[in-house]
Amino acid sequence: PQGSLWYKSRASLYMTLPGGLVTIAIARFMRHLRQLFLILDAIGLVAFTIIGCNVALELGYEPIVMVMSGITTGIFGGIIRDIMCGRVPQVLRREIYACVSLVVAVLYLFLLRQGVGEGVTQLAAFSVGLLLRMVAIRWRVSLPVLHKKSGSAAPLRVFRAAVRKMMAEGLPDYDLSEEPGDIVLFSRRGQVL
Image (cartoon, rainbow, N blue to C red; front, side, top):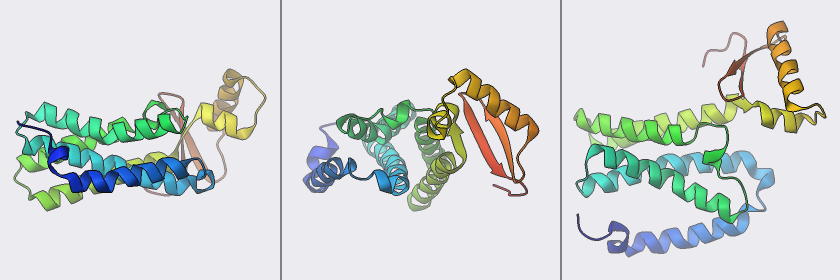
């Protein structure tokens, strides 16, 4: 492999740089648009994972390097954005984030190896990745976040015990379950995901 692909395509740099600077400038004011921000972040995560995989593929790298390139490209932009905005990076929070990137990269590689066309492969990997991230955003809540948002003055361990009691007793319309990493899954009864 010779040279850097991003340097050969200056148009990409000229389009990406202003977009990134504008995003950094307005990110602090987008708190009321959090849901939109998370959706756009999910789209960026998945799209840049596919782009990273594709670049490594075009440069002739081995499959493991292709997957790692996709993951790194997918999550690193969000890490830089969050650090520059003074926030804990999304990838370090208790949500599935890097795992989505891994699934997208592996699926992309798998479908290409199976002879599926590039356009269909990209669409399938993008759709699966976006769906996974949206499910994570929509239905998974971590106990520390729930504790903070509820305004509870009780210590986290007491709050955790109260949530577990609520899980055992049940709610009228929702089922609650606990998953590793202090994740509480809320699901509407009778609704199939």
